Image (cartoon, rainbow, N blue to C red; front, side, top):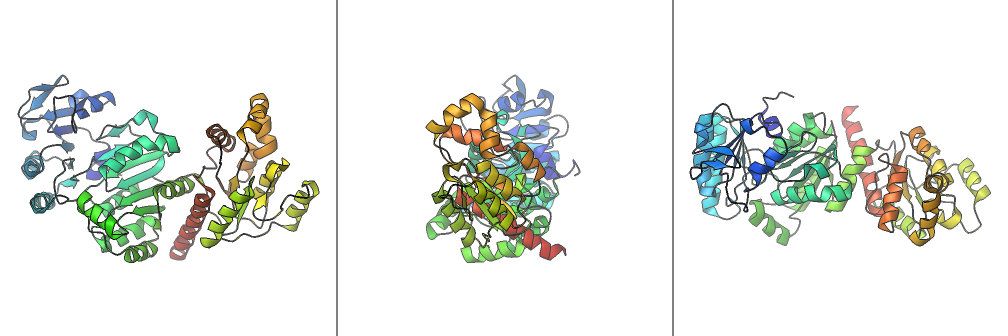
Length: 470
């Protein structure tokens, strides 16, 4: 990917100007100069612009971007909304490559703001400059340790899940939430009111990004339906695109209009757009990111035949219901697998699908057979144990308990082509222990139902792509 690509320069700028840099300790954007220095931006590459200041954080301050020495790849704009078109004009004179307008107060607030936003977009188109925003916080590049907003980069695990969010605050909060959810993030873009760069531009960019394995989108509306379908279809042929869209109800549509100025159309039409373009739609944020982690960590199921291995009949039933609702199949295991289980199972144990192990101590055997059975394409494991019961055994012989009761690590390596999701339930320490037992090869879902939906989504995506590539 060429480093001259303006969107690429958002994530890897060689030089940066903050227009509207502030000296005070608090307020929107006030800590950005210090943050950029702290994450390793070279002071010689960071230029501050504010006609009322001479120095901030030890850096010289220029009256306009035109006085900044040398080239500027990225300008971050934090000035009042009605002043932004003038600032964009200065950026054009300076030949800035790409601008992140973080200022709010545009189409989301009324006609005067909408006029300023329209003027900004016109200037960008005529000059060939790219703008992300307004009303957004720009981008985060977790592996590259760069961000245009203040986030804790050290807390976030780098990975292949890249995110496009229409909401800036959503992007910030996602960065704070990701570590607790074990979400491994690549690149984030908040696109705000989309005066120029929109969801279709970001799909095309991330579709070509070799480090991005899964694209997650939070949208409040689609700027250009035809462009979105074309970009999403192109990208979906390369990698999964997952979307959560708000504005499904009249109340939600009203909220999106006042938030980013988005007009959200009929939900049934958006559903049809997603189906045409191979986009997988989520109904809530937990489901969205559970699906993303499944797509990133696991091979796509070769078919729709799923087996649930559970320590609880109730959790198994929940998974089974959702699997059937999503069009998945619940076949019996082969006669050989069933016979091996029955030879060791107590009378009360249900050797079926779901495979309810209960307190039999046969979870490891059930997993071994599930992961190698020829009737099965994918497995959902629901490891459950009362913490007061299992804690003493774990304290004495953790690894032995792992091998005997749940899963041997070697088995996961041997069955590397089998899709495996886990949905551990119970005490937080138990959930952490199960995640460690299974490792990154088996991502943990929030609920058995989410695991079922993620499997179905992977099958839908595989089937859509196979039809279009054969």
